[in-house]
Length: 156
Length: 146
Image (tube, one colour):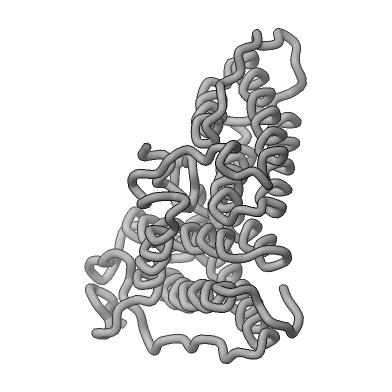
């Protein structure tokens, strides 16, 4: 996204916040993928796998950008809470999809935050990430929103 | 691996991150609190006035085209976006044989992305980016945007 140089005030902190969210998304989606049956729930498995790959790529891009800006990227935690409980040994597709949907919605809010805190290439990156997360929501039984990542406008 | 409830005492960064986002957004005095937001007025953001005017024109056109093709949910989306920009809903008649909805939405999506990239105000950029994502969702649903 960016080369060496002094980032605008707030940019680095916002990038670190987004990276922290990506670490969590990658971890949670990995857990959800491990609980999804590829043979019984092929489309959900494919959607979770695609989301996992997308967030892993975003995580790596952010890590590289933060290093280019001369900072140490925030590290991943050893483990994370799931956004919602996954009950029992064989969670339902509905439970898994709802958890994945929540991951994407929270990431969309984080990307929208990054849009506000950045400019130039970093902002362009955040806009694309927000758009992609919003579309991925649809694969997890999400319904189209009025303001993805900024739902306070819908509540006016 | 048991995944019911908290895995470790440490809170999920995703959860904390979202909280941080809301907390930071709440400190933005140009936007108000996340649950009591005001429309982003072009008059209140002079450097972005021309940019907002272009977006409003594109939204009004898309609203007319969607309404003209009977895409009521899409037209409602554009009206909500116009209201968020504190702009009037299109007053003109819906064209009977206007351009295809999908092409109009694709143009609108590109315009919203470009406007979000170029906005001087971070608050406005965030709103425009969110609008572009909303249109992007409809474009990803063939049954919504024919």
